[in-house]
View 1 (cartoon, helix red, strand yellow):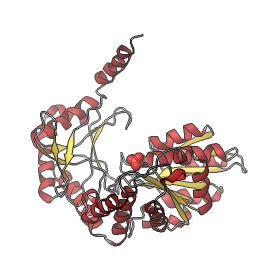
View 2 (cartoon, rainbow, N blue to C red):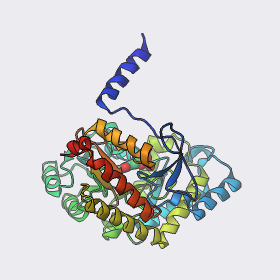
View 3 (cartoon, helix red, strand yellow):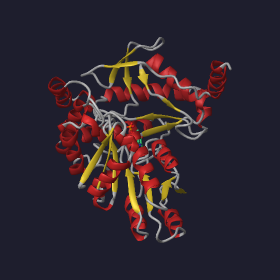
Length: 404
Ligand SMILES: *Cc1c(COP(=O)(O)O)cnc(C)c1O
């Protein structure tokens, strides 16, 4: 059997569709973010990153870096085991306390990534609760979809951000089945925000548990960075809040927070929690420093909002269409995978602007886009340079046709 030929055939098909993924090899430069050194041919040495999920630049924050260095010097690099077998450090326990406090919950539980936390928590809930049904928003993230798939329980998909559809679907289920409503606060590809209160009301009416992914909101929204649920004063009505330490907090890792019984249940039954080495203590220490900083500092959030508003306004002035939403994510729709890739290549090569083309399967075919995430460290000059470049390219007719 020629396995390599089989792999190559599928890769060839992906390339023909324009959906083959090419990574930009970067070297982030501490103190210079969002500037990075590029290691790719055909790109300038220095580029400006416009698609980072390190939304607030916390990955280069002095306090966060120092916390990580101190913990490495104190405890070494790795955790040395799973949480159960010699891998639980003081730093993990302290971070779980910090997270529980952030969301006003009794407890929190750490995972090696946000992906793993969704996968592990949803698969455990769905498989361990007898006759459970998970009701999933149609645009939920791949990590939730994989968790539900692994749960092998009944799944019901409700229309994106549509509480009335959720209500109808909940009403059609047996009254005594445990129901879990899984949704996100900020959807990362369109940047839209869920009608959280309406969803909670529907879930409460049917006695369903609420499972909220706040990955693109923690650190960014709410007076202390507790996410949209904090901003809207609704965290106490959500049963499980899931988040990441890898995006606005600038580190790596994921977590859930909720009641003590819920977290103990997942801790005790989730294979994705039990059978893997714990996060390095230094990562936990850095994440805790980042969370603690953003609980009391609003400077980063305010400056980010300013730059987001500024980029939107500048795009509007030049007539460059972008999806309107209430978040920090600015998608510019290209609607063609090949053009999306070409545009990104030109931005990188000629302007030193790095924005990754977002193609299928991350978004549906025909909705390919460039997705900009302005942060507090993008200067006004960066924004002007970006809008200038887009506007030159926009006038070239190939691209104009793509958006027509
Ligand atoms: C990125 C992402 C995750 C996964 O978080 P990681 O910490 O990167 O694994 C989960 N949910 C959503 C909506 C995401 O965008």
